[in-house]
Amino acid sequence: MSDLDRTVDFYHHKMGFPLIHQKEKRHAFFRVGSDVLLCFLPEVTRLDTQLPPHYAHGQQHLAFEVAPEDYTEMKDKISGLGIEIIHEEHWRENVYSFYFKDPDAHVLEIVTEGLWG
Image (cartoon, rainbow, N blue to C red):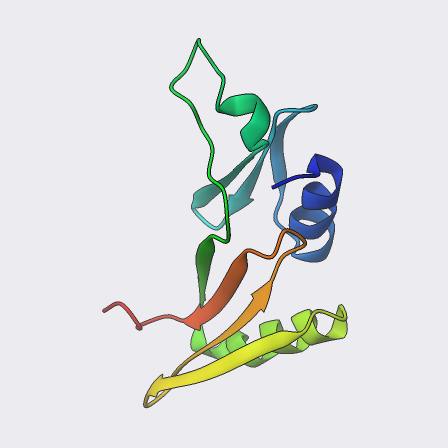
């Protein structure tokens, strides 16, 4: 992640994840179902001395699980936002996923429940 405002715009305003905490020029946290997505500015948090360093570089991959009946709606929402779907996979009967990128080129995946058992 390189631009916190852009990250908040994407995950909160476009993806619709509630913003639960933000510290300017450091991090933003989003509620994703019963989980939390933590986004850190790596050049700031890798030097942290109070907490263990929080950072990653390069493309990351995140997957978000949706109910099968919500899959097409989510795909249409992403496409409707002008976000390119870069791949769609049919894993097995009634189990699908599609891939797209966030503004920092991290690969995001929406997958129907059941892929991982």
